[in-house]
Image 1 (cartoon, rainbow, N blue to C red):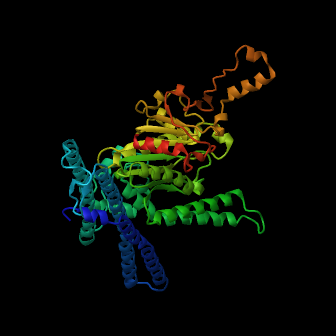
Image 2 (image 1 turned 180 degrees about the vertical axis):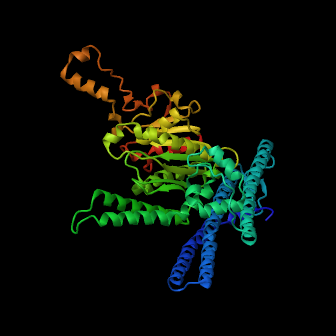
Image 3 (image 1 turned 90 degrees about the vertical axis):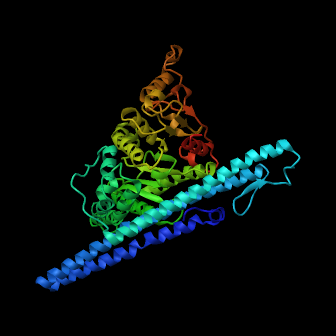
Length: 535
């Protein structure tokens, strides 16, 4: 299509494109079963047939398996393309709706072709001032309509070009091995991005299909490629958890109460299955799997919406006890902020990432130490740099939000390593490892914090203050001497970021305890969304 008309955009159904993409991705299941069938057939042949013919047949079966397996990333890519198209059409329709509302407010009419004119019933021809103002409004509305239609046309062209490229690749050669010299794990995202950009599409597809574990974890590789690679590993990760469960079950006597480790594996399996359900859902926004490790408590990085093409990107870092078992719930918190962004700015594209790529504390004695936050710093730094490196188009506004112990992770990473972020947000924070907002390296006025009035984190005082308070109760003379300090601005990990003296900006929260910031109707939810949007 050379363009998209007013009636076309008004009538388009983005959910239909999402459903079509989901149907393409759903073909990976039957494809995997066919590959498994060929593998089983090869095993049976090798068990009862030998010689040159048997060797040739086995090689042919192996080739067919590889050809079929190589199709899976293409099916996922079609889903990505159509989801991207749906997202862009949704934004274009929102802009169209806003333009029509602007026309109505100005006393204008928009006909079925998208032409704008003055409504004679609302603006009298004899009212010269009104006619002049309406003329200016006509130009503004017409420009807004054109911008919406141009955005839809650009989305249409981009999707068509990517689908055409996939078709040509299927005809001329789908994948080819890349040259040696792959980046090592933990390489700088700028280096990774330069390496990936120097590969041909066929070489990238070969890497996704043959080395998904490498591609899926490299910060700086585009989000779409990491998502394709990591989805290919879902069955492998589930098999690892099932094998771990079998090993533990073999050690549990009949009738014995299941061990803590066994319950942990069950929780991770349930979390993984819930994430898979979200990954395969056809609704909006599409989920992108950017990393996973089922070992230990489990780690996962999931984006809602495509960060590489969004105008605004939120990275959410959860706190204590977060793991693979409750990752779906943590993802729901990111989704609620994203929903508010869409409601407040329907004409902009936003994405939200759950970043749970660190070992979160499980017990209070662990949470009393900043060690795990320091360990997480380099990984969070690389991830944010990777978002910058892989983003397509003008840089997105990047916001990093930490809750509870996650706020310490964010603060330590920002202070010790630097974060590619335009704003930092701390909610329910026990301190962020800094004494002042200026230490965190983001633009002035872009450090934000909120603490609910009934959040127990307010009691997270430093150990020396707790000791002094205990002494105060037994030695009244200490109070007369002005000891301890009564300001109350020091928390366990430093100056309270919700205190004006920290140098940040504070937004309000309703009552809801330590986890109520995302509750519907809590002003903190709108506060978080407005920071993400830059408002």
